[in-house]
Length: 258
Image 1 (cartoon, rainbow, N blue to C red):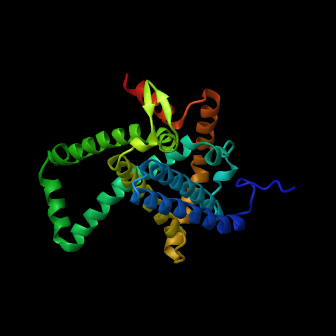
Image 2: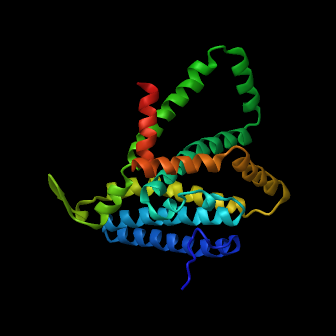
């Protein structure tokens, strides 16, 4: 009887099976959209969430196939067995999409008007309050949004369950009561996550020398800067305290600011 799992298959096998996981993710995503077309928004919501969970599993397997060592981290089976950890990774990818989108807009403006970067540099140099008036306010607004989305992603497992099952908590909760607006709130967020996940996979699949060198540096940093150990420590804390990653981050945040 075979004892192979996602944690024990070879790197070569990782680069084969991630494609099937990704295909399952795409099928769940498409199924969700079809359910939305017939106004079955509960099932559509749950399918969108499951799709992104599968995408994250595919991404972890793929990255190990490309030379990372996430699966060697003690407790890493939690990625494959626990919803909340996948939701936290989805949240991290969502935040990446926010800043990536802003960066792309900035690059687009510079391409349209190359002189704009010179004008901006002069503005920063001549206006001593530039940071206070612009950058600080921008970061403040972003932090408010990031905190709001943190709270939203911490509830994703509730959305997944409520999309499938009736429940009673002070009142009846029924999937048929989930609205088009509820579904699109989920869809729009998770579509961002899906795009980032696919972009990461596509980036690592680029074969040119410069890109390969950059990713080799990232892989080296993960070892030299003890990132794997830090991930392992966080997973150990979650096991010991039986908390979700969202609970741990919130607890840490509250401790720092109280």
